[in-house]
Image (tube, rainbow, N blue to C red; front, side):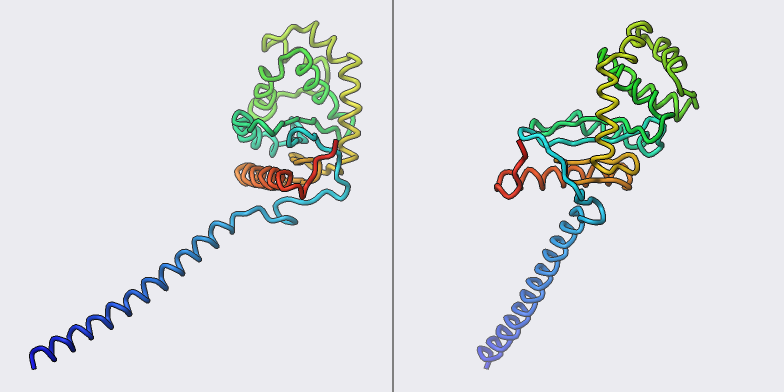
Length: 233
């Protein structure tokens, strides 16, 4: 009698144990599924967070090219600038970043010239942050060569070297190329990032821009490795 009762108790315990195991297994499966869904919910969405250019351009065959079309007076560019600068410091060996100052109208050309002039004399890293700060924090009006020359001189740049570079053939050529790129890539606003000559990222908050940028770069890298996406020579 006692043995029978013990067997009944043991059988009841086993059923309870099996039911709990099944519940835990189901719960674990649901948790895993939820984690998977959460993980993929952050994947960049084409058409929403990035778009495919209507006319893809020739990209660098050796590295994944990232272009930033920017404008110093753009507040969104100002807020993205520190995030992108941090991203650039940890740039993978197979990625390169190139900045393209946008020129939507004649009045925006002087600052674009200033960028290329400073770049040509090796001073852009020294003054890049300072230009953004002067415009967006100190409300400086850098609208022509004279005001910009005075500003760069006050920040330790040789005024004569800057002026020579500002009007040089090299800077003129880069200005013409920037204008051409704006047309070719159909740039309508700043900041706009273009990855591998085909994917455009714009209109996002700085943190989201960097997140999507990393995901698109990874997507291009994977495509190149698999042979599905071939870099143009």
